[in-house]
Length: 453
Image (tube, rainbow, N blue to C red; front, side):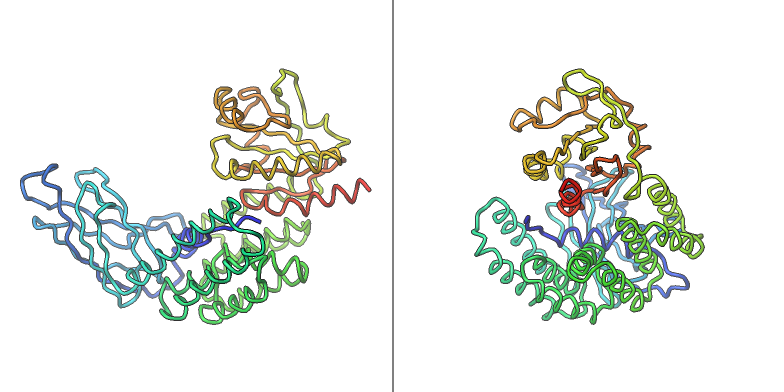
């Protein structure tokens, strides 16, 4: 089992899902000030005016809201008040004369004051940020970076299996100290979630115990850690318990954007579990509830296609291409044997990380007639050959440019790569796996074994 450094994903997910403007919201405020100057080698005039700091977010209607904007005077001084809906980490862009000189990530919290000092053009290398929230986050960030190195060491086989659990429990305790020592801060929340997430599959009882404490304090958890708990409940207590867990989170939430996200997740869980009728019923309710949200309607249209054409049990669409030896192949010809088809780019880092796992899957499940086919998009023959210089080529690879990539992306509704479809010997979709969902593929492969027996 790969050990992940969860916290960066948590931060990204928090920005994506918590920035939307709530109905009749009451804005919170943070005072921001500081000095940003221009390096003498760029501008020797001593005039530091016109450096702009800007932070914006997109609301549910697809419109841009400005959280903060301010410009420096000749001394480089600036100040202003940021207005936001809830405590979060927000990106600030720094520009001058329509040139971008970097981004600053700031935590904004009610009543906090942020002070910034920096110099352009190399802002990222010299910026200093000070406030209670941001100072605590620096503590978390140091711990998180250290754990990332440990996770890489573990994934590289640097620890024996017997030692991994003890090491993860030690780091969970370190994250947990931040959660307890700095209550009600942004860093406390994401540190608490890291503390229980890294225990998944190693100490599940402590994971659940700490997850419940975090949820009791904040009434919510981030999408990444939510998925970790959903998978645990689904595996140990079944789908009904997983859906019940989502309902528990809905009952605690006061955020319309979070409720929308939870509704999305519920429909996706039903989709993955082949409960298509129920998923369609909830999708219709979803459309009625969030009709004003461009984001919601785009998502609804996307999953509606999946439910109609790509749901588990649906026939896999017909796709044709040439394979590396020059022969033509259509997926219809594969009926009678199970196959895993993957759409990816060879330069995709996640695909590269997962490649050894795919090799292991092929070596085991080819005994059950499993075929694997890779369709590389945005790839040249040179890139393909370079990819396989240090890797074994064990399964069929579609020849680059022997297929209409846009057509395949439309037919399979590809929004991220790698995306994979596991298909049974009757040509029916067992499940689609997007990105890290591939970790669950063994469960689908077991259906192939059961059917074969």
